[in-house]
Image 1 (tube, rainbow over the protein chains, first blue to last red):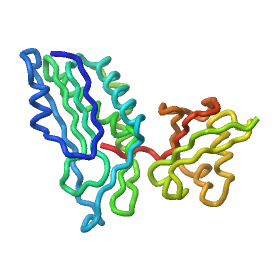
Image 2: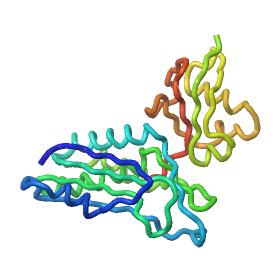
Image 3: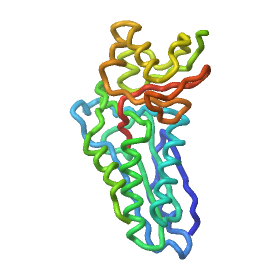
Image 4: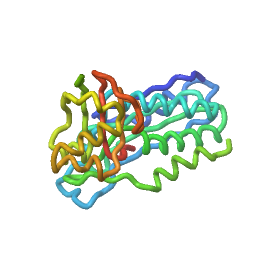
Length: 151
Length: 85
């Protein structure tokens, strides 16, 4: 199991199966946990796109920092994060987070924590049609809860 | 002496200001991020968001608080709370 972190920011879709295949290589990774976030229907969605803006350069830096923070807390092997940008339709994939580790507790916790930190720190902004989405307080609470998390 | 910053505005903020980036000359008295925010809020009606709304700041692509010291040539970004994922 090797401890590499792979971050991709891209407009094109990703293949969850191919990402899993990377995480499942070798005999050390007893546990693989993956998450996919998708575009939900939104009020103006008939005929409207979801647009994902990002801060080129800073997004990669922040995601690498988040991955490093997660490595300090849990014994995980490979981390793979993909986040799409640009115009997307309801039902499309937006984000992939995958983690492997020797045992499942670390993999589950690390994957959830990566998503909670991504949602509150990574410089992306969503626009549903003409309306910019506003950040949710519950995401801040979820991210803050990891500071008190016993692991 | 006045100096120059590279400003970026993301998300709804960019729409409000009708600009997403600019080279901005600021007076020497603007030394920290909170002073830059005050300076920007005085530029005109669209810019009052800098004194009214919750905005995050990054300097040279790292999150920065109000007391972060600014230097000539810094890349400074302002944006609403993030909504990725």
